[in-house]
Length: 384
Image (tube, rainbow, N blue to C red; front, side, top):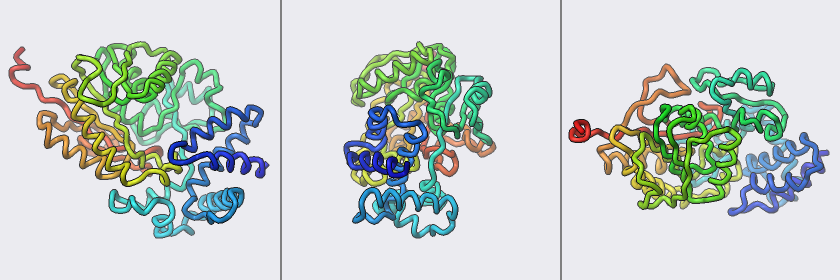
């Protein structure tokens, strides 16, 4: 069995590169391996991601089979004897050297990176307990205010469950769910999810709005919006419209919104536990270019926020250039947008602040940075 797993995993790794992500090649390969048992498919996925998680330790002169075996042994050793891996060793081998200096490198983060990630679900509002009963192998997000979040630890193919096809849950990381909660949209509001992608956060906003009001979901890629529409149909979400938007100053509509969410493209460093291949394909140039893009997206969305409306900036990365520096620059250029404090879903008792930086070791999921602003109401506008 192990030989078969490593054979398929090696063929997947052979076909990945800067432009072909391991998870995409993995999905494609498993679709062609239709007779492969579910348990074996899971072992293949585990082997592929373990390879990239432990790449900094592997002897690249060996065959891929031998490297996969070495990665498997390292992963098992880390689970059994985590303290045998020193902080210095993890700093040298678990992450690329270019990242040092661009962000903090907490020792707890390095250790989290080498563990397998948690699979998070978002139940439909008020249905978490019932969903957990139906699926089994679930536990809730203790110590948080995320009342719809569930961690799934079972072995089912969730995409094949009747619960999934009935729209009873979405696969959504817990940090992503926290962003939706910080937006706190109200039923009847008008919101714009400017970089909606395949719509995970859009669907969450719609649920929080009780399928009332209106959400515009835009993205530069039409195929992502088509996937979002299929997800929305399954979830029976209808209070949305979609449009293509390339991030430029030419906005997709003339609406002034109660809230705008800019979940901007980023280097994705907060996802490196879940997506270990990205550690070795992301570059410092990516960080610099994306920081410039993020500033532009915030600039171009400002006219769409109505007086008194919210602007929420979110990125699943942890570099200073894409987080605090972008937020600082925005506040200097747009003083009419005032920071407003929102509670931290992961630390409900902590003082509320306008900016949050969540590390994977704090969330149990991805790392995320969020900043919240409210557009000031001028006297003339308040009198009208």
